[in-house]
Every structure is written in C-alpha cells, then in structure tokens.
Image (cartoon, rainbow, N blue to C red):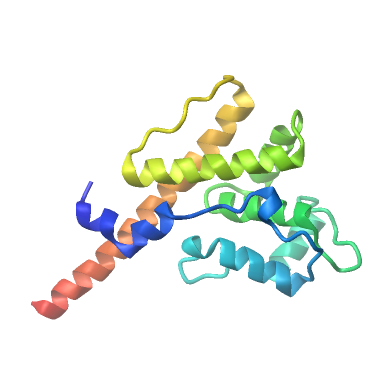
Length: 179
C-alpha cells in the first residue's frame, strides 16, 4: 500500500476514528436538531460532503420501525445507538438488511453491550482496511458475531476505497497544476 496515502489526512482521520460507546452518548434526551448534530459530529469522517442523517431520514426510520418513536419529541441514548448503527451500515446495506442484522444481534444480548461490540468491531475493521492490522480473534465462533464482523468489514473496505479515490483525485489535481 502506498505510504503517501497512509500518511494523508484522509487515512489518518479514519484510523483515528472513535465510535462513541453507549455510555459516551449523551445521557439526556435530545430534540431532533441535537440528535442530528451529535450523529454528524461523531460520523463526520464518513460524510464525504453529504449529510449522514436528516430529520426526514429519522422520521422514515421511525415509520419503518427501525427506531422506536421519540418520547415527547425527545430521543434517548437508545435512539442514538440505533441511528449510529444505521448511518454506518447504510453505506453498504439496505435498510431492511440493517433492520434484520440489528434484530439478530439483539436476540441474545442487551443493547448496550451489542452496540459497544459494534463500535469496537467497526474501529478494528477500519484499522485493518487502512493498515492491514489483523483483527482480534473472535473468542466464541457464533454466526451472529461473524455477521457483525462481515458487515463492518464491508463498510471499512468501502470507506478505504472512497478515501483512496479522494486522495488520488487531490494528488492528481495537484500534479496537473504543477505540470
């Protein structure tokens, strides 16, 4: 892999990405505009100049029963966790596939630990995609865990390709100016 790319701001931004764990998400209920700000800030490395989440998207996810309805127009940590997962995985999967994956992951584990595992696996997958660093072995080989890992690896590979294309576009544009 080209060293220039790994040293670029494109790659560094992804390798430094921290997916906020469940307890790091705001502990107070938020209004829609606050939810959008939290998600946009947390996932800014993946936005590629586009909005990661809009109020229309949130409303659609509620209608499709992917996210539970807000209580008194306020969204909790639970809502934020679901929205983070949806925003990350929608880059490579359909909403119905994401909904099914969430259902499968939640069958045997509480939301908090399932979401934290998702965050951990996502960070590892991104490091692996960008540096070739091996992912930690899965202690218990369960199909649900393999599904989660495969999903986040798909996401990580897409992010790598998009960031590399951005890097090359900028690099090629700079060479054209010089030449």
